[in-house]
Image (cartoon, rainbow, N blue to C red; front, side):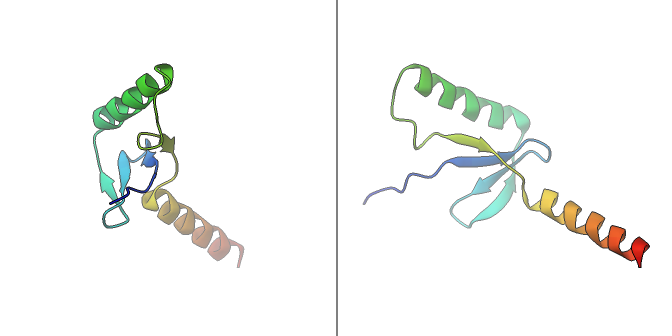
Length: 79
């Protein structure tokens, strides 16, 4: 069975990783995220295949929800 090459997405603000099995954000410690990033950097420096270990910082579902709340409040005060 061939594995898909997917990067690991994380949000450092809320300390969350995107879990691929259920396609949802999962709470993880910043220490765990730091270890994953260090492993990725190691593979990069050794010129090894990194697609399975790529780590990308992005916004999580909590970030998106906070943005929605701010926008709703902004529109409500302007109405």
